Image (tube, rainbow, N blue to C red):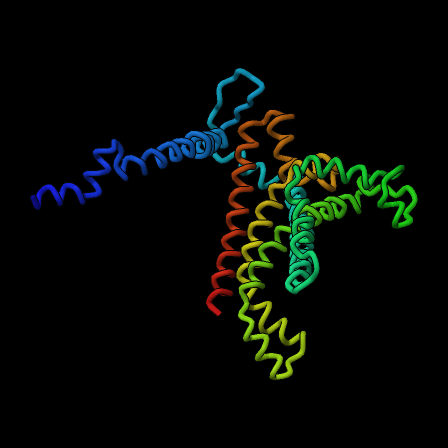
Length: 301
């Protein structure tokens, strides 16, 4: 009789009698995911790494010839490549800074009791839900010197935003700020809602001013989440391609992603472009690690 009770209460026996154990169910979900990552992520990564040490061109039938680090040396000694990096760095700085300022500012405005707060928040999140190519075409019409409404409202006549080499990069960055500031706003709202209310009450009792409260309470407590937003947006800004490609073809707006595309699919320098992609990857990883170290310092305060 006790043996029957133990059998009846044993969950493993029940699972086995039903056909699948917990371990089998776990493997059923994990193994396809691992296989997918290996096939579509890890294998192409290693395959392109091998090509980066060759002179292979996908447009020819010639076999790949191993040339060692020659591709990397040529790229690092190419002044035009460094110009692309400088343009991208400027774009990232303008774009991410604008997104943080606008996004955090919107979060501060929405972090209070206002009418139709949910509807306003939803409407502000709409730009980041659109395709970047669609956004690029939409803003290209807005920037149009003949019938664009931006020149009309600003009274600039037929000023060509996307044709002017001094303004085109700023015009693209403005579109990126418009599109992704809601992402920073969303994360900032989550951080602001987590700030304990009693800290503001104590500051009010001590008659602390708004500036003191912002820099001593709000900003330090929201800084970790704000840093996470900066990390994500910096990585994405370095990879910006479709937005800049659709909006402008100026040499002053040729980001590293556009240069990489031209090298790989217009000039068909497959080995060289693979090396270029790894240089970009190493730079993004290095910048991200700097951000992460600073984030850990902010969290430790």
